[in-house]
Amino acid sequence: MTPPVTRNITTKLQITCRNCSLSDLCIPRGLSQKDVERIGNIVARRKILQRGDFLYRQGDRFRGILAIKAGTAKLVSLDMDGNEFITGYFLPGELLGFDGLADERHACSALALETLTYCEIPAEQIDTLCREVPNLLRELFRHVGRTLTAETDHFMLSQKGAEERVTGFLLDLSDRLSRRGFSSAEIKLTFSRHDIGKYLGLTLETVSRILKKLDAMGLVNVNARSIHIIDKDKLREMFATSSKET
Amino acid sequence: MTPPVTRNITTKLQITCRNCSLSDLCIPRGLSQKDVERIGNIVARRKILQRGDFLYRQGDRFRGILAIKAGTAKLVSLDMDGNEFITGYFLPGELLGFDGLADERHACSALALETLTYCEIPAEQIDTLCREVPNLLRELFRHVGRTLTAETDHFMLSQKGAEERVTGFLLDLSDRLSRRGFSSAEIKLTFSRHDIGKYLGLTLETVSRILKKLDAMGLVNVNARSIHIIDKDKLREMFATSSKET
DNA sequence: CGGAAACTTGAAACCTTTCAAGAGTCGTGG
DNA sequence: CCACGACTCTTGAAAGGTTTCAAGTTTCCG
Image (cartoon, rainbow over all chains, first blue to last red; front, side, top):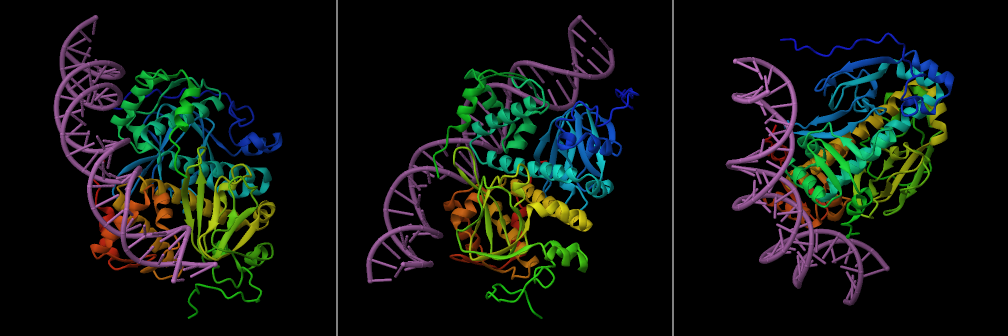
């Protein structure tokens, strides 16, 4: 057995927060040079995972806040009946792990959708680090806050019609990608149709049908897992269309 | 004795965190006597609002974290099209306002469902207070974390069948009430059917129908806005029933 | 007491799911 | 290099659950 995993040739280059390419997205964003140096020494760096590997599992002890350096991940929640829901997804530069804050145990599982590297602020260090680096506290709050409003948006999206859910998902993904320096028009999905469905509260069949419809309308170009957004404005327009009630 | 009273005749007595009846629910829970004293001096106390009043509005500048002393509140979000969603609700002893953490502006509106009093930790004080009171930081993180997982649960609930959504809502409400010292069987709703619908992603008609059905099944006793839970076990059972997929 | 708002109730319309089968994709091994 | 098997995705038709629409009825409050 033991499949020939593409093991990481550990580049011996020392990457710290200071010279990390994501510093303008990640925690250091709001921090001074000196502060960055400080947390750079504590952050555990460059863990590497393969598709399907867990960053952490539901029920795991909370180890710390993770920052994705490369790759994408999904947040999976199981309810008491074992039904699976995807409650969020993460791109490079985004922070996750906050679901372990409530009671020291993770409420969700996070797993890699492709080869993924990440950094980690160990849980035990957070308190002291926040005290030593005043702005870090605020920065962390900003990030949980953002996670929170993202969940709110996710909920609202999941209450709309199927068409809007899918277009909303594409727009969100596209925006978040572009904010992180990736092409906002050429999307290579790491999600399966099933994943998208579980994220949006739809069946994979419905997702498939709507993707096809958007393609037929000329708004996007769907080819298996690669999606080309042709007319984002019209996509946005169609996303907004359907409001009626108060 | 001294069971948690439902209402407070505006006693002119000086209430601080130390002698607050909710101290075992609110922030002070995890803190030492001395720490409580400390934050007790900073917390702005006992603002009072009437039904329909806003604790804060979407877009308002983030003023601080609020703790409800008495009464209930709902969190309302409007999407870009003006559609209204209820993204959460709060009982005495619960903290809200975290939706303002992301960018100094509240992403939702919070409004009182009945006469309500609350306390407030001013935003400007949070940083310094956290540095002075080490455990407060952890306690605050615990609370945001809890808010986060509550939202996840809310999302998952909203993906289920209508019957489970309503029973799930009743069970959640009942549990949270009892955890706060209120009767878990005798519920006096401060929500309208419309509110419940907006919270669960259902129309008010559907909520009405299902409430009636649960009544007819003998699981609850519905009388306008007062709900008596007769058979919570069976209610739980019916909530779990419907799991099939993996 | 009267009027507005909240709630109930029924029937039809609508959207998404379910079920079922076929097509495409990918990796492995002959 | 092609075949095989396992997935993943597509596509169609029927079933099912919620919403919508449309009246009523009740409750609440001035």
